[in-house]
Image (cartoon, rainbow, N blue to C red; front, side, top):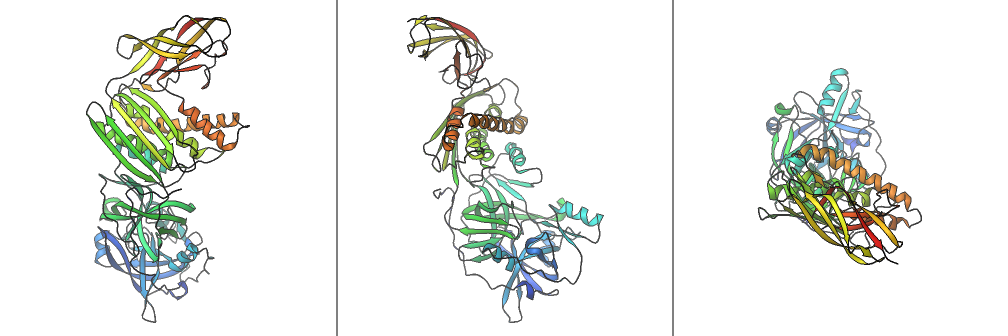
Length: 582
């Protein structure tokens, strides 16, 4: 995939790699200094004391260095905070040289929030280079260590088994530039265990040099809205960046976006029972290539991502919103993140939930695609046009990225939307074909009488081409909506519709695509997927179908599809009769 540049910058490391202290030389009682950011982008420090070095079977590298954090900064932050993951700890060795021993990565859930654990730097470097695990150290205090998902679980584990030390990763998700109404949609995609913090609006700042102690972000989306987890840089070696000291998603070899970050402040423990950095993911500077038990491995440089440009225009208010975002090429998240990027500009142009008619065009091109794919549709709603249109962008992407036959990774996605206030939703009441005597393949006119939602009957005339395989004689066509799902007559309920319908719609789309793929076994794999996506693009709401005798089951490909531009045909049916000439 070609490198992209949307809100991206490259800021090179300030210095070569710092010297390290092997785990075998770390001893209880050593004192050192940890570095992290607690406000803005300025690196601050706090003293730490090594209390033990212990084996930990489920911990990174099978061992952790236990520490106690101290000093005025720790008193101010309410202890070790989420977001400090990766904070490098330096100890002066017997040779008088300051050396890195590892990354602050876990908290212990103690009342003072000052006990933590450090992932050995030797292990972080070894994993980044593909080396083997370290030899496990001998512990001076044989107390078992457990890794749990959050601070509450750590506290609970230690209360139920006082001899246990339970450690939790110092990590949480951060979101900026996203409407609060859309955050539940993201939360559902990430899972109930993912803690989200949100900042509004999105603030664009200059890139910050990534150096030990500075904020770093593992991003799944960057640009005009950002989604990721803020941690700290542990170690820099040329263009290679190590951080966090624990996994982010645990995906192993991966392609996430590497960015810097900005910290507004640290929210201390009394508010939530656990301190956390309140910050915003920053500028994308490269890629995270490894997401392993011992931390993240990244590189500064070219960014491989899927670029989405999303535009919405409101004809009533004469407002327009444009967004430019890059997404990490993660097949499981791209559809839902594109969903959000479709809806966010709409919320901005109309300031919230709205009625009306929405025309959507999604153009997918580049990457693995041999030719562009264009998906167009029209949606209408009496209360919430955002809810009914949710999924317009994600449906073709779900098929391309999540099918069981072949993955197609796009390069760019363009979403263009026009919102108008009138509710152009119609029911069919009668139909006829003019002229009444036709020949196979002849061009004719379909005259529809439709009843507008909350309006009067109207007559619409659209061109139609008669099927070429018609037999001579009298033929009756049933005229039905092509796809009746594009209209919602109910009052607005954005949250419910987004949480329920968008996820369900993606599931229905993928199930239908899989059935389609099974029917196309004789077609080459790639062509099967592309043909299925193009069939999906024909599932228009602004069209009717003419079904002749023998086409009673309304499959996607059955009958003649007749466009009725910019009008959602959501119900009703009629019969149109013609005489087919020899």
